[in-house]
Amino acid sequence: MAGQMLLGLSILVGLHEFGHFAAAKYFKIRVDKFYIFFDFLFPMPGVMNFALFKKKIGETEYGLGWFPLGGYVAIHGMIDETQDAESLSAEPQPNEFRAKPAWQRLIVMLGGIIMNVITGILIFTALTANYGESYLPASEVRYGVVPNKLGEEMGFRTGDKIVKINGRPFTEFDQVYSPDVMLGNNSYYTVDRNGQLLDIAIPKNFMDRLSDKDQTPFVLPLNPFVVGQVVSGSGAAKGGLLPNDRILTVAGKTTQFFPELQEALKANAGKTVPVQVTRAGQPVTLQIAVDEEGHIGFMPKSLLKEATRTYGLAASLPVGTKKAFGVITTQMKAFGKIFSGNASFSKSIGGPVEIAQQYGGQWEWERFWTLTGMLSMVLAFMNLLPIPALDGGHVVFLLYEMIAGRKPSDTFMENAQKVGMVMILGLMAYVLIIKQVLKLF
Image 1 (cartoon, rainbow, N blue to C red):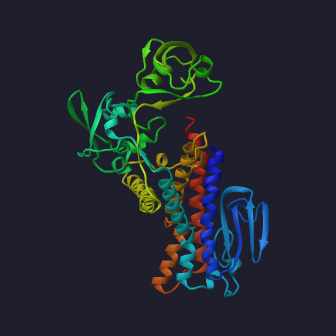
Image 2 (cartoon, rainbow, N blue to C red):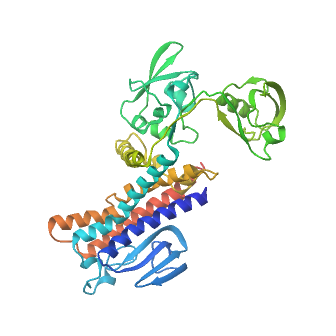
Image 3 (cartoon, rainbow, N blue to C red):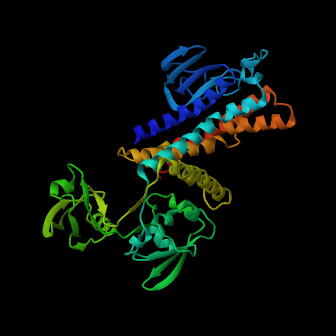
C-alpha cells in the first residue's frame, strides 16, 4: 500500500512541479532547483539541508530530497517556501520571476495545475482505451441487495430490488453509488419489496456515516458465487478448498450468496467448521479453520455477469476527459455538503493512511492508475483553492495585480505566505497525527 501511494504521489508531484518548471523556462525565468521531495525539513528551508541525489545541469540543480512529502521548484525571484522578501531585497534582474509581466507569472503559477489536469485526462483516456468500461447491468441484480448497518438504518432490507433512482429507471448497478446521487439534494431510491414499491431517502448526514469504517458500500448485490483464487497457506488452502468450488453451507448454515457466507464465517470466527461444497457436480465436505477476523482466505468469483463497453483511442478521449473532470465535480459537491453543514470536515478529509488503504495490499495496474488519475485531478483542484502558499493563492494575487494595475508589496506577500503555511501545516498535523489518534478512541 505504502509503495503504491509513494510511487503515485511521486509521479504526480514530479509532473506538477515540471509544469511550473517548463512554463518558467519558456519565459526565460531562472530556475535554481527542481526537486522531487524536499532537501530540507519542510517548511524550514535552512534546516537539515541534504539530498539523496543531486546534479547541476546549466543553472538548475536537479535532485531527490530526503523528506518525502512533496517536491518543489525554486523559481528565482518568487516568494515561496524557499525564498522570502529579505532575500529578494535587491533590484529584480531580467531573468527573475518578479521581473516578468503579470500574465507570464500567472501562466507559471498555473503550470502545475494544468499539468495535473492533462495527466488526469491522459490516464483516464488510456484506461478507457485499454480496459473499456466494465459494469454490472442492473438487470443482473435479480436477487436484490443486502444492506450493511447504514443501509438498514436508511430502510433497506435484504432482498430489496432497487428499481429506480430519483424516480427514474437505471441500467447499470454502479449508478446506485453515483456521486451525483449520494451528494445530491433530496435523492432517493425506489425498491421493490415483495411486490410493494417503497421510496428510501438518502439522509442529510449520509456522507458522514458513509465515511465511517465498514459503512461503504451501504448495499451490495446478492450475488451467487464460486471460489476464485485461494490464498496459499490460508485456512481455505489447508482445508482443501479449490478454485471453482461452490460453497453450499458453513457449519450447517446455507450460503447461497457471498454476504451470507461472510455472516456465517464471522459467526464462527476462530473455529474449525464443516464446509459443504459442490465440486464438478459432486458434494464434498471439508474441515476449514476460520481466523479470528472471520476469514478463510480466498477471493470470490461472482456468478453475476458483468458487461464491458469498448472504445477506440479517439472515442476514449472525450470519455476519459469526462471521467477526469467528474472527479473535480465530485470534490466541489463534497465541499458544498461541508459548507452547508450536511457533512463534517473531519470525516470528509483523508490523509496518507486513507490514500494508501485505497490503493490496497495487492498491486493491480488498473486500480493503481485509476487512483493515481483521481489523485491528479484532486491535486489540481486543491492547489487551485485560494489559500496563500498554494498555487491558487498566488493566482488570486496575480489576478488582483492585473485588475488593479499594481501588485501587493513583497512584505504583504511574505506575510500571506506565512499565514498560508500555518494553515497548511495545521491541516497536515490534523490529518497525520490528531485524526489518527482520535481513531484509537
